Length: 294
Image (cartoon, rainbow, N blue to C red; front, side):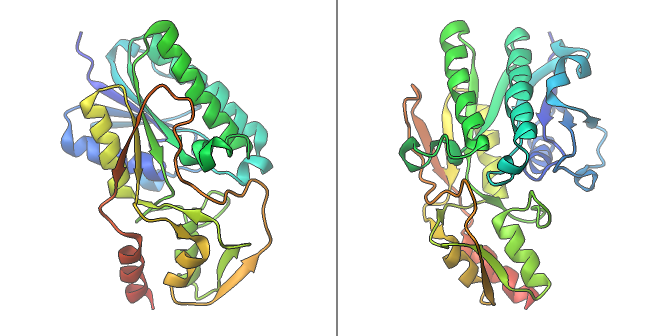
């Protein structure tokens, strides 16, 4: 059977669209992007005959993909992916990350399709104590547990890649789904003070988009059923990052679900987490940016 298509959920988003670029460059597969455009954008569409874009929900994947036998792999990046916003839109978060993700897992299991799942340090950070810190972290932690059980019950094969605050050209810089670096970059462009949520000592690891998608591709290519962590070796506090921009800073009040560390812990996962470190340094990226904009 000739399985010649890769399905990327969230393919119109920041990470998904950059992954599609890489897949087009380094593989011969055709691509289907499935996105509900809650945070993705048609601006990220690529004009390439090998890519097809579907506007729909992951919970409807079995209806939307008419010929599952043609699907070789699924990169499941199309989940609700913000901590603080998951308090404001909890039902949306639960529907996407529980009902939608269960549909993707089931679709892959039933059709013997290779799965690459994007996990997050938000669910395993702080020695595992942050897994119930927010609706978002809770759903992501439960999905990892579910995958572990699917492996035990049905010998289900999959790869897991842990994301750490992905940044780079094309990141979301405005609105509720904006990233930290995106927000700072937008404030700098508009000559506004950079907003830092108190206390500012929250530490984070950051990963450039190129490093992130390269490890996703590596995990897919190796096909070893492993867990991969992709981050930078050094962590920074949010205040330290803001100061790298060398401009004014304003402080915002504390928010629910705020994490204070992002180091990855293995918890009770039966798989070892293989750690990879990005080549691009955050300081270098910000220095180039500030020279360009200031």
